[in-house]
Length: 89
Image 1 (cartoon, rainbow, N blue to C red):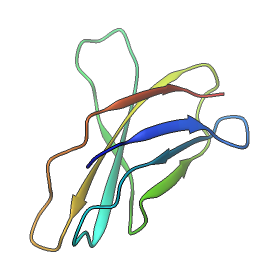
Image 2 (cartoon, rainbow, N blue to C red):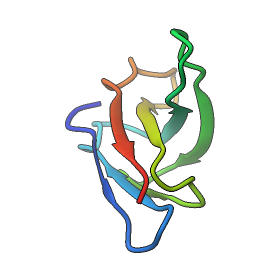
Image 3 (cartoon, rainbow, N blue to C red):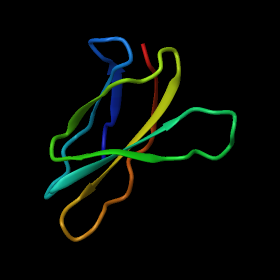
């Protein structure tokens, strides 16, 4: 996945993420992790969609979140995108 970016959403607690569409992608798996003092990042799948953009809602304000995306072309998952971090408004 290329060019993953995150921006402030329209409402408090929202972050818009987008990325370049992958050729032959059937779906995208979106994962999130909250920044913590732990050295280990704990990823959680938040949605599986067919579009190359997504609005994450109901986040805690002033907290940093990591995001990463992978695509699935029907034969298996691609490598995860580089992670991007964004503070929720």
